[in-house]
Length: 163
Image (cartoon, one colour):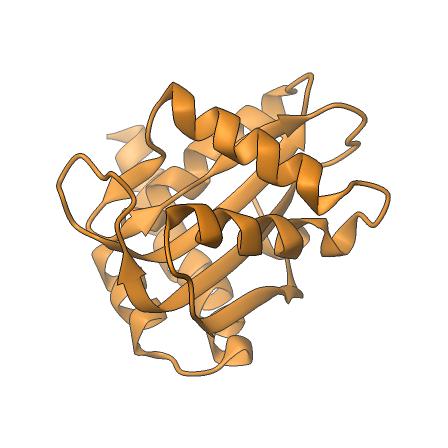
C-alpha cells in the first residue's frame, strides 16, 4: 500500500484547534472532501458521526482512525490532522486524542480497501511514527512524516504479518 495515493498534501493539517470530538470530525470531513468536490462535507460529517455511534474509532495512545463508507465514491481518500490540544474522543484507554487519520471508502468495499484499512490501523499503532507525527509543527512536515513513516514501518508490518 502506498499511502500517498490516499492522503494528499492538501488533506493534511497540523496544529488544528478543535473544541471537541464533534468539531474534530467536522474539520476532518472538510479535509476528506477536498479531493472529491462532488461529495458534500456535511454528508461525510454525518457518516463519521454515524460510524462513531457504532463504536469508538480510537486506536489508543491518543490516536483516532475515524472512517466511513460513501455511496458513489470510486476510490478511498484519507486525511490527517494533528491537533494543537488533545480532545476527549471517548477512547477505551481514557487518553485524549491528538492524532486523527480519517478515511472514506467506497460503500462496496473491495479487497484493496479492506487491506488499506488494516494496514493504516497497524501503521497508526507504531509508537515511533506517532512520536514523529507529534514532533512536527507544520502541515507539510506532517505529510512528510506520515509518508516517511509508512516506508519505515512497512518492513515491520511485513514481519508481523509473516511471523
